[in-house]
Length: 375
Image 1 (cartoon, rainbow, N blue to C red):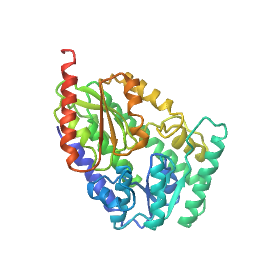
Image 2: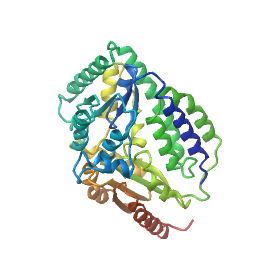
Image 3: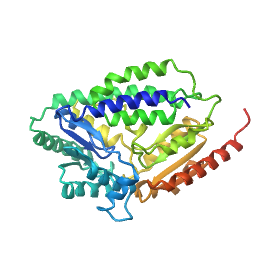
Image 4: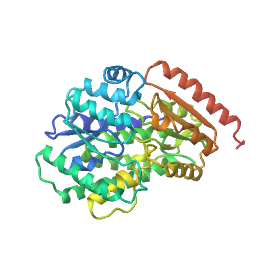
């Protein structure tokens, strides 16, 4: 498959990352989909999503966590421990228990300032809205004090609106992945999302028009209408897109849908926002983020089911990292509810996992191809 678009995006991302050290601005690593990056931007910092995902980083992180801990959480700790320079601070959310534990270890053992959004596990309690609003206001005040700048609600509003507009523009590109004859592959979309989450906002805004122009002139990238595959489960790190690559490498199937927290869930938050930026962040980072850690989490399952049906998805790959409990515990429930051909992959970042993934994914694709009506 043509890789020019991925090379273009990765070039933009490399240039942006290279400029971080010389920007003269503080860098804030964000550790969760529920971490409000706009707050970091409003105090003059650059938010960068922490998406470490190599075997070396996972092994290094094992110094801080037990062997039965989430592979991603270990990789984040290992990556931060090896990083030079390290981010000036880390912004996270109290979503899954292991993520919360990570934040404690980052502050205690890596000596990096940590800021937390206390994300409630429920939306059913009538006091939740008031709690979220005041907790976000607290968080904004703490980060402003750390940065040595006054709390500026108007500046926060500017960044809330800028990112909201970008999410809408990326959503327009997402439609190209979802088409019957896609002009954007799942792998390319994931590369685009890595650029969005790991680069300076100014750099992304400056380079996005070139990406949009490239895609506006592009022909369908599959010779025939591909099998339509949905990808659900644990987050994908920077170098953790092998599942998507293995699905699409033959040109017979495409990832047209995902529900991972580093993919389209980052930008599937385009509802009309309140004018108050704090209230807008409450909408964006709690009410519009359907996470498996919430109780009840029926709305997540209902939304995924409806979207898979709408897009005509023919098979689901449910990818979980070892000991990722929020998604791992939901695998059986999703399989029973969705009623679609279902492949559950549970793995870590070791190279030995790659061969097993290839065998199982190709077998699943063959199964789907044999059951597909002749065109």
